[in-house]
Image 1 (cartoon, one colour):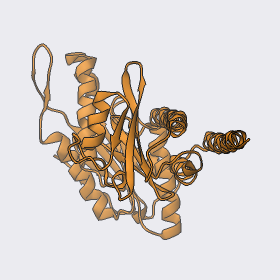
Image 2: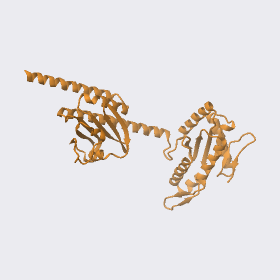
Image 3: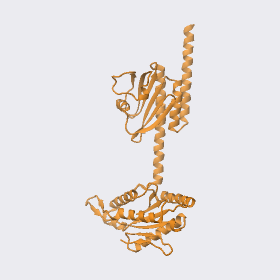
Image 4: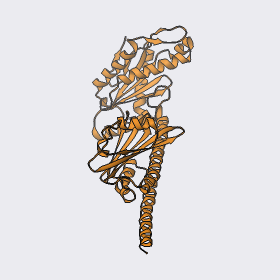
Length: 357
């Protein structure tokens, strides 16, 4: 009779643990926030397995996402290099049980997995397509893990790893789509639509704050001749190098984009008329003062210059997007008409600054 009661009690306990496991699996399946998933796992894992502390490592875009759980809380971090413990087990790709304390073990576990009263650690690699994609380390307090504990840890650990990996893959795919919609494939700068959107936002900020904004349009001189003389591959190389040099001279809070073909647009906010003139000179010098080294069958240097037109709201210019672009574009046209390779400011009443070089 007592044996039957004991079996019934054990079956009831197992049923409760299964219910806790499946409840947590359901909960994390409906959440896309990794920090929240980690928090729920840390808070509820104890209800179906004797896990006092744990660490999950998952591949993430050339690095690793590391989640550490202990005392009902979890921390999420991104690490480029694996810790010695994680690197050791990641390379071995096989499950292990580590009795604690074990001073002669190959590598020391993370501090939270080796806290007082920890009796053992189980390490479960998650392998896909013949390589390790995740690593779970779980620590037991006081008593070693039972067979049922290990079963539940394997089930939940596998699901948790898959869930986190799936979210990371979706985030990467979404970021790739956003980048494609935002950035120019060739130069890596903002594309036309994005840089105009930045200009529109900056102009709205200008109207609210009263702080001035500067706009620069730059065009590579005789770019068609470069393509015709050296080929479109060299032309692309020149575009990339121009973009790199312009970006190097642009403030972190400003916006630089490929406006179209061989034209570039820079939005500087806040920016006084004097700061705008100085910025345009820096951009001009960055291109014209150092020749472009090109590769190919006949390596050599190409002298590349740019013409620039500027407009500033500090001079009372219209703060509408199209109007300000038109002012800068007209100034660019005059740079070209006056011989190229120069900076020209938008016309203002009784005042125009043109730099010849």
